[in-house]
Image (cartoon, rainbow, N blue to C red; front, side):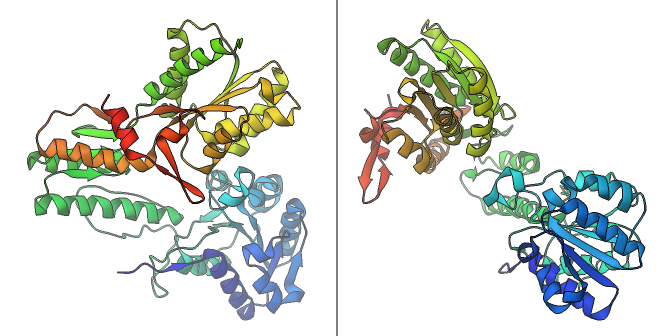
Length: 468
């Protein structure tokens, strides 16, 4: 069945306007984002009941509280991060504790506003609102449920928080489906695994269930080798057990899953080691006394291993160096820029930046440049080299001197190679390494070939590298 997509924001605005037509006590307030939250649809229909408060979320919530105290059903809308974040005190002290009839729409919730970055994203809003007294929280999974949530919110006596995604989402419910607050809905029946999800995360849960079902069907059909691309490893034990019982080797891509024959992917520590060894040689050749800032992502083991490998490579080479500071760039250029700015302010003598991906490295480089320091004295080393960002930085003759290339487009070749070995019952290591190499301007053309305005990966060069 083809999936249809609808937008929760449109559903919110349209249903709010429909509700306003039926009930003259419904009013709406907005904090300068009406054309994004779609509350402007209500405003166009009922301008005398629509209050544009400007960029003043605290005032909006206080005014909504006053309107509710006067007998109105007040819907206050803004981006989720601003709705609960900037106006938390007003929501808690007045609306929540006072059990006032205010309905808060947290729009563009979660990571759905990826384009505006982390300052406009909210992943903690549900936790915060659920902790407030008298607060009812609705997290509709699609546009149909959003419409029902708007009407259910109006019928609840007291404060309500409605969480709305920015982007179109799959329609899993129909207009005629029942919406009962607090009741679980069974979306797919089974007997082995239970997956609980709420809100738009239902789509991810359904995809995981679908993938597991497809894998089980493949086992039944008698495939020779089962290849599994990234999936929630907790959903796979039964699949792996069935495949093993049937004598089918299981290979995973970029996932370490107990019970599988092998996983195909890079060795992060080895990649970091290669970067450390390369830099030690480069530092000696260029008389660099390394004072290093590391822009990492310590929450993820793969990223920690990259940093460990980098240090180990320098140690193996006998290079004397100083780690000035390690910061958490969270893998994004925006965050890396911000945390690197603080680190560089504290350590203006930094002359080396190592980042766990292209964004981390280029974010650190941008912070160095904004600090007004001499870029000719900086050596930047990255990891990943997965797209245009790293490639342009390396070829720009700037501070970016080297990057550990992971060759993600070669991963499929490695997976097929591993599958053929498994089919032929050849021994396979626990990690069938897809290969990494330190890319510099000097060896770039060995692994990448110009094709028009882009570059193509030279698979034969990588294969030769792997066979050494």
